[in-house]
Image (cartoon, rainbow, N blue to C red; front, side):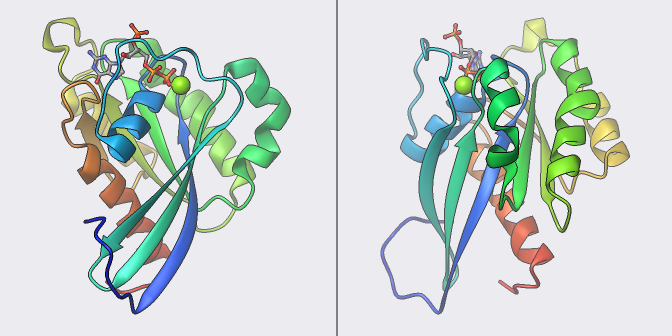
Length: 184
Ligand code: G3D
Ligand code: MG
């Protein structure tokens, strides 16, 4: 996946949402992906934060419109708008907080399925893999749940040290293209 300018045979625009409990690292993941930067003091996102990034796969350009979740209360208000026209989701938990892992199935995936009926692609992400000493969710448990919820992929990331960020987004993009019958 690159971001260089070139001539494309095909272009697609996809909307994706980043779902997960507060402070799992959603905004940090997007910021790392988009700017390859990381800040220790992002303030709680207000409203829906919408970020764009173009990615190139062979001769195909994919424009990603990424919707970053707001504070939980606001989300209640804008939920249908948040999911409208969305093709994929990154389901994110924090490997150091088991409750955020439980929320994936009990809350975030349920919402996604409720609002995104057809061909919605989703992958499971365990973020903060750099915090090895504080880990409470093993990689194995992550994989198990990913299988159970039929996520197309599972990956552990660290927005802090920049581990597996491109890979995570590429997995989702590939799955979306796949669901739409696009060969890359
Ligand atoms: P959110 O958008 O899901 O609410 P944020 O989460 O991106 O705002 O991140 C919440 C906190 O977790 C931030 O810390 C951020 O720096 C930290 N964080 C995000 N990703 C990682 C990671 O991969 N590793 C580590 N160690 N920390 C991470 P603060 O202290 O600013 O609240
Ligand atoms: Mg945020």
